[in-house]
Length: 219
Length: 219
DNA sequence: ACCTGAACACCGTTCAAGT
DNA sequence: ACCTGAACACCGTTCAAGT
Image (cartoon, rainbow over all chains, first blue to last red; front, side, top):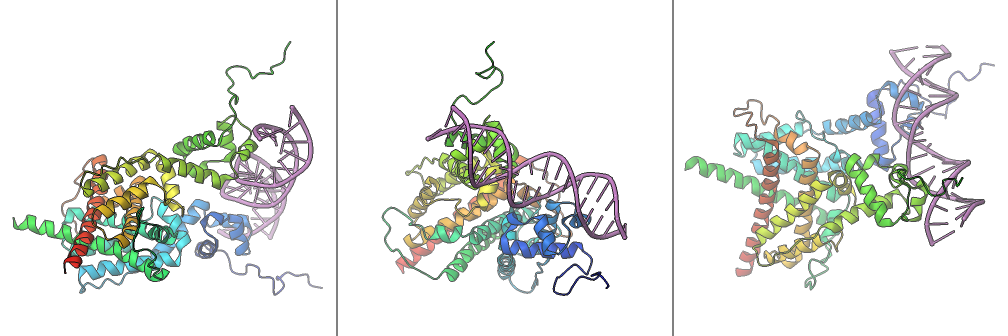
């Protein structure tokens, strides 16, 4: 009798060879489900029906694995830059796209933001943002700095939104003797409201920069 | 000959009993030096010249240990609320104090910000901020929401400053055909500059909220 | 009450060996 | 070239036993 050379059906065993992309994709699934901190090389291998050590032929170590997953997700970000729309609308859409991406992979986002190389110079997100700022009238030499501050602030708000801090804080009693309490807006529109509060503040600030540079030019 | 009952001098061995506060303090020292991710119950015990298992009589587990350290540092934050100064100055000082604290324990800050319970309702930081916003003319029912967004944005900027992202981003070429490049300001004042860019933007935004509510009241 | 040694169930990673 | 088993040097934590 021919012994089970080919794995019995029902028992899924790796048929296709391992690939870097496949490993990243599986890792992302596990991260989305259970978070970065519980991801394990051994569990990842199990999810791929592979030997734990096989992974090391495609990925140097766990740290590189996480970096790979993060940059894979970052590359998903594709902005349709509508050059004909006013810059306010373009910046808004950029932020919304990023937020949607963050909501799609909240656990990864929380991890990634702590990493130093979160946003890369070549990222379409970065290119689009600097482009919009330039077209908004922000002076050339200030574009990078303002873009950086905007990124940081938006990421901060997104993290706080994702881990629930934003919602918790906003329902805190504002002062010792509060008056109009318990508005009880529903949770979803509340989250949106706060995000757009931040976004509008940012847009206003950019507008200020534009105004200032205009006034300096005409003086 | 009397065998070494009392530990030989030179070899430091625990003389005072372990305490929760002592454990937190030692943990903070290790975190400041090497970061949260390399902190280990066993290494912490070694730093305290104690048996690893002794720690578990004062702290339930590693997660609680980290929470304890974080809240211990958070409690260090004491704001001298100068009620007589204009709110712009008070909000600025609040942010500066927080930034100083973050710079004192950057490794802990990076970890803490990811945690859901980073800022507690009773934190003096939170109370001071909501108080300032109220005195700035922000409508009662908006104070918590605005405070939350400000916290999130400031934390985001601080994290990005601490892990170097802010500096790296700001020195990125802003657009394909850049003109005035290589300003080469020194790094420290650059960091300050970006922090205050964000801070000024926030103050401007609060000012807008105040204006809006004023106009609504007089209409 | 406080501490401890041994042990358990995990980790990431190395390495020599297999095909 | 790709995979693998065994092993190493770690983890956090439990538990029974010591004082």
